[in-house]
Length: 274
Image (cartoon, rainbow, N blue to C red; front, side):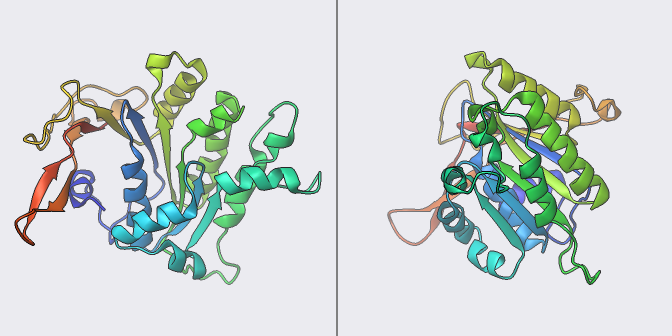
């Protein structure tokens, strides 16, 4: 996890906000470090996590998670983590008996209709225990990333409908949280992706935007923090307060001269909190 980011958002594993939709957005850089951050954060916070992973394999997330202090294998074995591996499931769907339900059933359909099977998978994964006792703090849906669904043939409206129903179940009914990553491809003039990004921006309680600095990489600059009083569309209640900040995460590496650690900046990336 990035403690600096937690301090900026005023959250800790012992104090988790509930009923929130967090949108992760990256432009001209890789924002996957945010996905790994929130995955490890919610597992450490003892939350029930449903992770819809459409980009990487389970082993990839598990290796990164171990570096961040969590074991996805252990979390899955004890029922805290429900992991949906999109890379593997996208192949399995073609070898299933026709008519048998599958979260990615739309891949076998001539015309992609909706994501209802995927929603039903999430709903079942985060369903409260029958005995009424809450074994975990709150449910969390994590999606990496929604832009892949567009590449697989789904329309932006169908993906927005999927998030809408997930919000109704996870955020409102179960008082949990949703974290989803979307790529900003405005330079490529992808109309469907722009519709998805704009639609989610209006629904989100928090937007974390990672983007490359115009000046490029510089190891001597550790980042910047910019307060903003601009009003974000769809969240007018933030007007007049600090609603935007820029944060640059740093990483550590061992120096060649010994065991002492020195700081190496990730100053080619800025993270803006809206």
